[in-house]
Image (cartoon, rainbow, N blue to C red):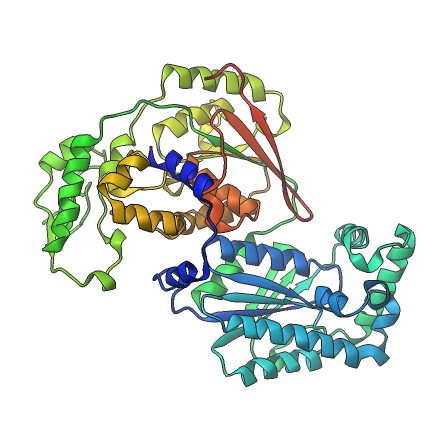
Length: 520
């Protein structure tokens, strides 16, 4: 089908885009078009998780198809000055405050300059910014830029001693500032640096004016002021979901299912699509004259088969034609994808589910996990390998957001056929596989946006989670957790009959793959 061949095509041709193509892509109307530009300036003592939070935010925005970047003052300092000197506690004495301010200002200027370039959405100025004086400099710099920038201070406070000790260890073991020092000497030096910051540290207050997000012990307590706009509110939702638990997230493709001849439905869809020259037709939208409700299942809670629905539906809803450059190509949806919604698991698929249950029964994460599935029967059936029959209602969740990528009139078409019958669509698809929107369907970028609620729930959950879904959706989820550039999502290798286990660590997620043997 087109989803699998989409992956193969990207592997062959690559996903990098030259400047000309990228400039064309960012002109495409997306969820980030005409949005405010956001500058997040972190606030907090060293080893309080500021860089961890910064990386989370940037990964999330990039995954949604925006452009975000971290500007770390510590890295900027080490590029200008030798780390073994500028990273020691002596450099953080009061007499060096001017030099530190100068370096931080250079880093801030880079962030503001970057944020004014087309397509760039969120910049994170990752520094301590512990004094009202430093934060005033940041506000004045943004004001002088005369750019439409929404400045938000992001303060991270940690009061948990056990977490702090672990943060200290992670910092001295991984930061170039402490290279060459014994661990105990590095810890002493780090604590000296922190004590110097503590003498001048003032938390962000309402008196300073402006917007802020204040986080204490991650999502334990979150305070916000002056947060407006979809991007800023989306960041708050993400931050309220994050925690430092070690629970694994398991990704698994649904078992093999029966196939169906789609040609009759596709011919009908092609006719509908071609009719857009004269009128925009939304097929299957039947109005209930009594209640005024609108939708393909307005009169029934049980979805009919696609063929029956198409035969019995009222006349298509006809609306005046609008210029193609002012209406999204996905404004009309084709019912082809629905035709495979009720495909049942094959005998080989049932064999896989049984082997899967036997193979994972001794895994710690498989003893009582939360189980997320799509609404498709093959996904629900596969998930039974992890469900306790007496606790299914409390253990499992069905998400329509986890349903397969809707490829519209191209659903089930081989790439060679798309190239032959729809050469212009093939060219657009090959040029930008992430933002390309299938006729009557959706793009990978659309898919990531509908999966955002799933991602937040996965971040929020504190017990092991098994996600049973489909190639396209799992590619998108895997790209988020592994911080893979989003335009490479369609090329991510998610093998069938393989359990993919992601476990969080300090700098992202590590993975382990277990293949189910004896299945073709």
